[in-house]
Image 1: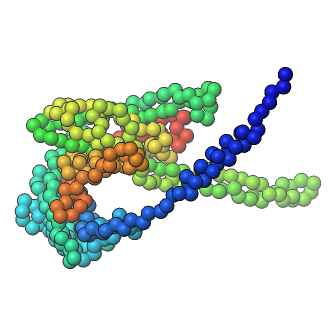
Image 2: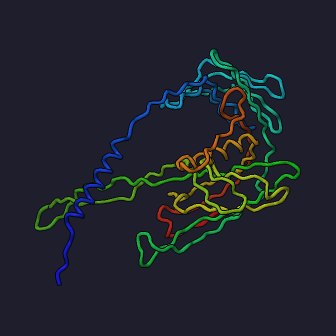
Length: 348
């Protein structure tokens, strides 16, 4: 028995669908909405610490549709007050930065930044430099985790990590905020092209015979550079993984001794000879903490049109930006992970 197909009916359905599609897409129109430009504000961004001179960036806000780079204010008057008394007038040094010449802030004190510029409302912001929280100890170990897939889906491969446990003692009776990151002084090998042509000679047959010989020597240069390895961690205290480091507070560890656990990928610490790794624990002000946490939330949700928009925290009155403070403790280790680290490695 033969099967009959209704070709005409299928063609008609297709034609109707195409017509409706064209009609739908062809009805789109472009709406031009004129957005009013709000008053321009002074933007203050910067942190102060007890071991560096003060450097603050001053710029202005832009229109929402303005794609121009940051616009620094080069004629501003910037003053720093300690406990209400003027301690430094900052000078413009380029790239939007104002710096104090000699003044270095102190731990436990409150500082206010005041910025004025013609045509803008003056702004103020204040912060404190918290007491330093020491790194009590730091232990490291090597992890080797078997992975499946990747470049060898049948046999799999192993991923190596440097795991660390960093112990701190959280001061009781106060709110404390922390930022943890690492800085590594690494090196890499640049091999020289040392293939040379050597003329050699051999006496035989009653005469000297000359010929070329290729000769190669292992000569290389070692170059050093600074690198900031990314810390990965699933520790319960972690509140945000930011571009500045791991952000957390003492909400779960109030007044306790606590050991924070994190990891680095091995390939972040390789070196031609050795890598000196500084673990840096910053005790940060509440304003700095709120700024970093809200900014990371903004980055995490800005591509999700279903998410509630996040407003980045600002403590600058009559303007925008942030002004924060911190103190820092360091713990240094030396790692020996060769550039081809599956050979051998160790730590000190």
